[in-house]
Image (cartoon, rainbow, N blue to C red; front, side, top):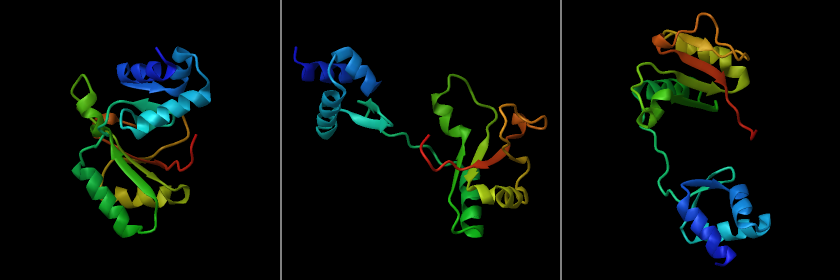
Length: 159
């Protein structure tokens, strides 16, 4: 079997895979593996799943908009039209859980100098709004049963 065919077969057998996995299995150079994967992407056999991960799954994850997220998004667009922000909720992942999610967290990610003003503005309309601290331990007053809103730093750069 040719190396090209081996890469194609590997891609079709694995839902998600990385460039490194292809290189290891096929025993070809990094550049040749990139070339083969690029050919497979151009022919529509595989798709980029982001940051060096590939997949043969064509559908992209499309989260269902939750009303609380939409309300907060509208509030921030109106109050801070030039602010870069992201609003999302852990309920987006509920279809992929093996259990029923009873409580959730809404995250509002904003630029560093807007964290406090945004948290203050949201707390006028919602209860249990908190600013995320740079700690691995949750604050003592954090209670997931209250469905909190966590305002935190928006990461704009690649890790």
